[in-house]
Image (cartoon, rainbow, N blue to C red):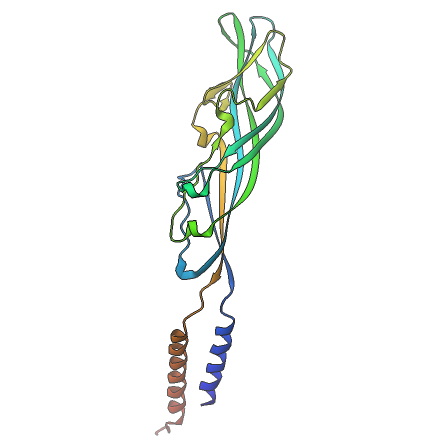
Length: 238
């Protein structure tokens, strides 16, 4: 009987402290399959907070040109003060912005010729990071996929400035182009113009078993204890 009472007290104590904080973390990337995030399973408990951290490293392609024969290379310094817009398949989450900033220098070989001008391609890059909090109700048993967009990919956005442009030279952004390899530009699509990584965190209070569930557990412990006591009392036979 003491065993049963002890188990009952133990279970009662556990029940009093069963409501504990817990965390679930998921990750996704625009460079993968964009699999999205599983909704919160309400059977786990009560979802208290939802946060999404976005880490960005985005590139854009440009071309610099000069009058033919005026220069063999151009050394350009550039700065970026742009924005990346978060999007999802749930309109209730809105479209918040992440600041994209960057600075650097590019030495561009002007080894291409067309229309009386020499030109060459190069790329610039910007980084950004932000954490957003969302309404937990939008993630209850509902799958969500994020897929943002670098607004600086739009030609004419005006978020990139240059110094060091040679006399008579011009600098123009490539439509969709963002990667330059061996002097050749390519347009793999905005998702693959650098990287965009997501980390979604669910902070929740774990569910507490119902009183009936605790009663069944106590009854099971009690039955097991009684059976063990009876087994010990059974006399051994030669």
